[in-house]
Amino acid sequence: MSSMFLTVVVPVYNEEDVLPLLVDRLRPVLDGLGRTYEVLTVDDGSTDTSAAILERLRRQWPQLRIVRLRANAGHQAAISAGLERARGEWVVTIDADLQDPPETIAEMIDAALNQHVDVVYGVRTDRSTDSPFKRHTAGLFYRLMRRISGVEAPLDAGDFRLMSRATVDAVNTLPEANRVLRLVVPTLGFPATEVGYRREHRAAGDSKYPLSKMLKLSLDSVTGFSMAPLRLATWFGIGGFVLAMALLVWAIIGKIMGDNAPGWTSSVVVVSLFAGAQLLCLGILGEYVGRVYLQQQGRPSYYIGYDSLSSELHKGTPAADTADLPLPEHVELPITQEILQDRI
Image 1 (spheres, rainbow, N blue to C red):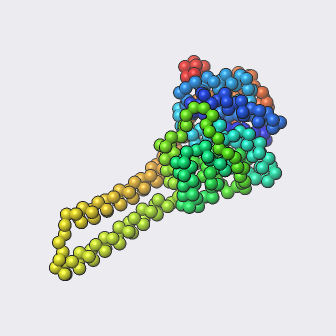
Image 2: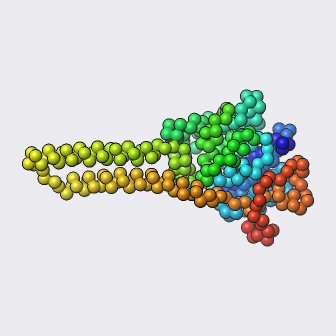
Image 3: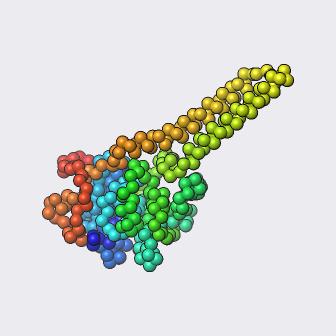
């Protein structure tokens, strides 16, 4: 069994402004735990100076580990990459923007150990720093997903959570290509509890979750965890059939009464109604067929280009507090120092 107690997974994408601030707040918290830990940053194909800043910070903080993806794979894929490489008996996932306070990690660990649970969700009890639009749409998202998917996901819980090794191993065995971890983890049904906190303003930089990415996350959530859209298509079909029968009866009665005068407007309305319903149903079916197609292809969601731990062990210079830990059983595509310098 690994002697590493805690791994903190931090997805990073163009976070050059906030990384030093993150280290200033996260390191005292982890050092204060008095346990072995690693901070596993996953550079999701950053195009700014995040890579260079992480390398500089690693020289000052031996427990900082850098995993770099070969291309931008997305927030959820970056977290998944971190979970696959995490070595701790407990794993925390937290964003780099400091909207989720690192100081809550200690409270999460205490809750997990005292209550004997596998998962501790960080729940945003105060979202006053978010815009009204963000608060209302987020609330609608969580309530809608709980209703149509049956997944009892905690309200206002994002990707800030603590998971046991058993939970992480279970997540890593799942075959989904487009994971939405805030729904995947509750689906496992492992014992869980919650820790509340106040969501803060972003410490620096710009949001990496614009409206387009939030919509994609919502679409992945709905099509990945609910059959409701398919049932909606079925109900559209039934409704269309009933309406067609009613129109047929109306036409027959009009013919019998002798006042059947079909007009251009009614024809267009009927044709448009059915055409719109058909296109909507085809679109819904297409989303599910597309997910099945992508799953059957079996393409990885991400490719690892560099792992600082592997680099250190290959050079014979083990990282602090990690010398006695085995290298994870993953084979990565090697990245040369010249390529690394070009990217930095």
